[in-house]
Amino acid sequence: MKLDNVFGIHEQALKLRSRRAELLAGNLANADTPGFKARDFDFRRALKGEMARPVTLEKTHRNHISTTAAAGSSPFRLLYRVPGQPSLDGNTVDTQLEKSAFSVNAMEYQASLRFLGGKIEGLKRAIRGE
Image 1 (cartoon, rainbow, N blue to C red):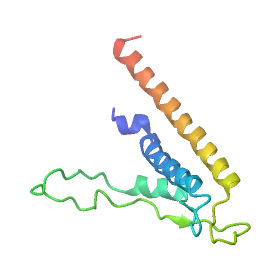
Image 2 (image 1 turned 120 degrees about the vertical axis):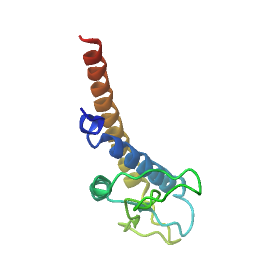
Image 3 (image 1 turned 90 degrees about the horizontal axis):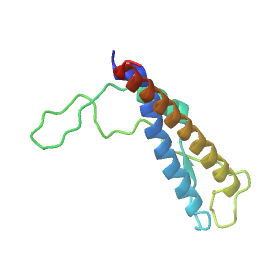
Image 4 (image 1 turned 180 degrees about the horizontal axis):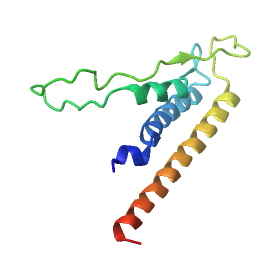
């Protein structure tokens, strides 16, 4: 039994959800910054790209052999939000939209955590023979 098969896509989903939370929080933090452009990424496309990437090893020393794919390469493309009503100062942050996206992202992050917690609890019971 491979743990990758047990956990499914949730490991990658948690990483992407965490990155998206940082982006959305940055957008909210800069809601009053003149000229700030709100950024986000397409989560589904990023997750699909992350799942298609081969597993790579992290290079921790300069003498280590490089892997074929760059370990630090981004699985997603950052996009700019198109504002519904642009502000006069050039800022494209819509705080209501950003708060809503942040809340949905947080709930989906929690759902993945609960799913993984249930899987881990099931594995622990199986190991104990319950």
